[in-house]
Image 1 (cartoon, rainbow, N blue to C red):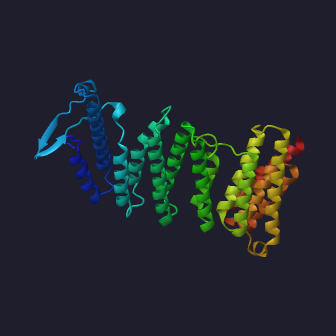
Image 2 (cartoon, rainbow, N blue to C red):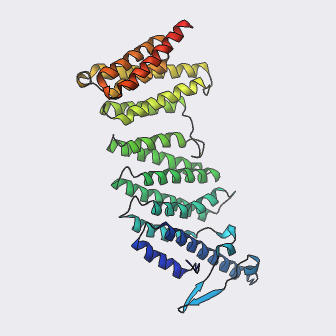
Image 3 (cartoon, rainbow, N blue to C red):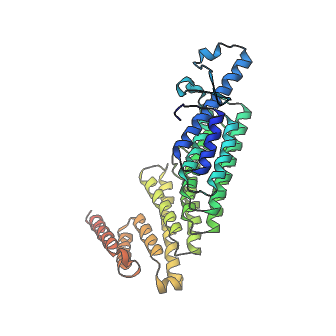
Length: 376
């Protein structure tokens, strides 16, 4: 570090150090500096060979001087001597280093430094391709292979620990980046396939474990980022898509009524529909009528579950009752708001006494709204 030697020899030394302590972020940072320097040297050497122009070193501001330490042939490359354009990791080096990081990350699946290193290696390569007007088929193939390989690695980690935050965070970053790359190159088939397969993956995780709240969160991400925005922003759902998402969540609610995740997902979809209708995101009055119909139908379905299930009637289900309350509020009529206020009172006294103060507050707010509507 003191000599700032960025060479293959220094790279091998960082490997040894990281095997001893894979959480040392300084070592990981220096390793990336070595990779950047080696990549720059390789590219400069390739250009010299192709152009047979020894003066290219000088024009690029690269001195190419070597030092002989213990007989080793190493190149001292200062960060300031590497042109900014060249500070991008060679794809082969990236593939090799990802494998090394995977080996170190195996017994340390929640080591932040390992996850950051993986992202830092791939980000320059994928984002640089996204900014190009046209890229060679070979580069696109290599990028696609890299993306699929990383998704597979993350999936293997989530198989062991389905709630690993670092794994989920990296997966969502990778999906956004890959989506932007495919859209920038007008590869609609790859873009569509990416999100369809991810939707299938999220569905599989939920089917395996309905209480996997991380998978429900990811499903929301896929539903809202897989639209035309290229994954960069959240896209409001169409009425048809929102209805599909709501029915999927409702079926999960029927399978396990005491599982909060699908109830929150269902309520979230409903609130989004109502919000979009209020903000005139839908094109016609007929669309708004469709939204109102869907909200009423979903509310009736929830009410049916509450009435027909003897276990719910016997022991209660705060998640179900809370969801029913939310959908009554979404209907936004004096009658529905009054029913919602009564449910808030019921939750405070019977099914959710732990949060009695919250439900009393909700009841007060709802009664005030009923009074305002009646006065108006």
